[in-house]
Image 1 (cartoon, rainbow, N blue to C red):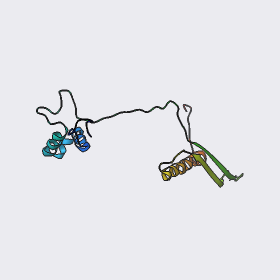
Image 2 (image 1 turned 90 degrees about the vertical axis):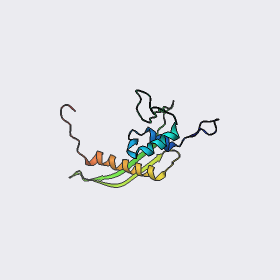
Image 3 (image 1 turned 180 degrees about the vertical axis):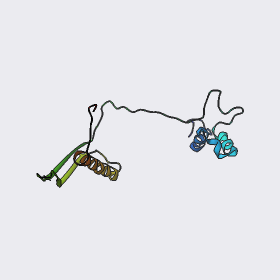
Image 4 (image 1 turned 135 degrees about the vertical axis):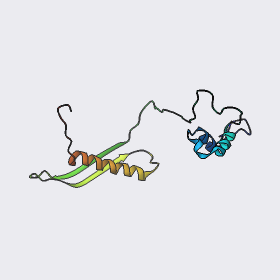
Length: 132
């Protein structure tokens, strides 16, 4: 990481992470001293009074208009009228997820969703009492 416009002012991300790690002392005093020299060479206490070591960042993204993937599932099933048993003759899924960064992961998520949906819909028993 560098300070823009200030030549020679750069830090290794690993050094920052080492100093921010609350258990950094487990790596030995020499490792801690070296990391501290890279991050902020100074005399005196590393942290100000009341400060604790740590590295934290938070960010939230809330687009003005939400987007959703589109899809459709269709099944052709055969039902045994005497036993209620199901037999899937055909099952099809179509989706439009936009540009796929990793198609294998999307395919796996779709297959997992189908398996969970079919299991929950047809093969699992959900029991409720009078309180719901």
